Image (cartoon, rainbow, N blue to C red; front, side, top):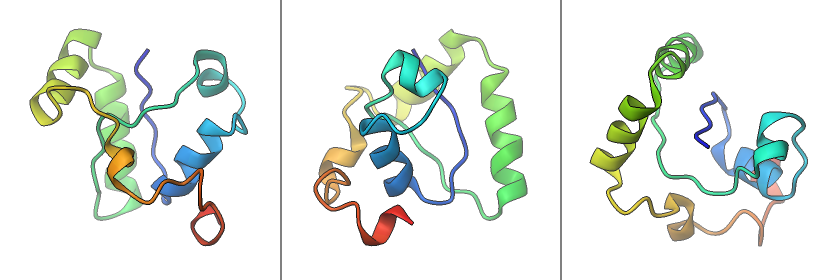
Length: 91
C-alpha cells in the first residue's frame, strides 16, 4: 500500500504511525516505512501536491518513488530514529 499525506512534522508523524497512534488507513495497513517525501514552501502548495499525487494511478506513484529511491529503502533509517527519541520532535 502507498500512503500520501501532508504533515508539518515528519518525525512526529512517523513516530505516530509506528506507535499505531493514528486511526484509519495508516493503522489498518501498517504504514511503517518512509520511502519518499517532498518538502514544500508552504502548506497550500503541499496540499495541492498531495492531491495531485493521490490522483495518480499506482504505476505513476511507483515510478516517482523508484526514480528517487530505487531500492525503496526506509529513508528515516538514516535519521535519529523517532521511536528511540520521540520527545522534542513529537509535538
